Image 1 (tube, rainbow, N blue to C red):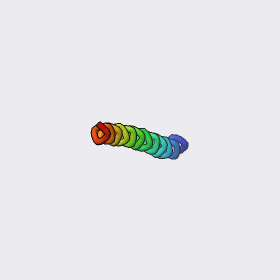
Image 2: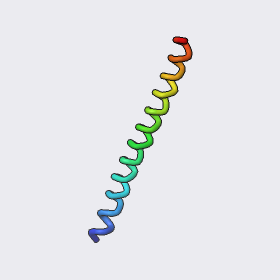
Image 3: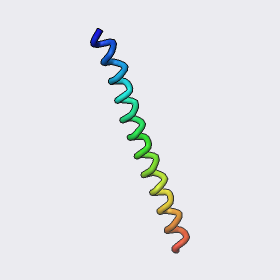
Image 4: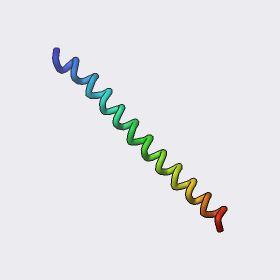
Length: 43
């Protein structure tokens, strides 16, 4: 009984943290792209 209740909760936690990691990566990538564009306009 316990395992059946714990496993779906653990999966939700993993998917949430994975989603947060992908968002962080996406944000950092987009920020670095914006910085490169800004540098091009400055020069």
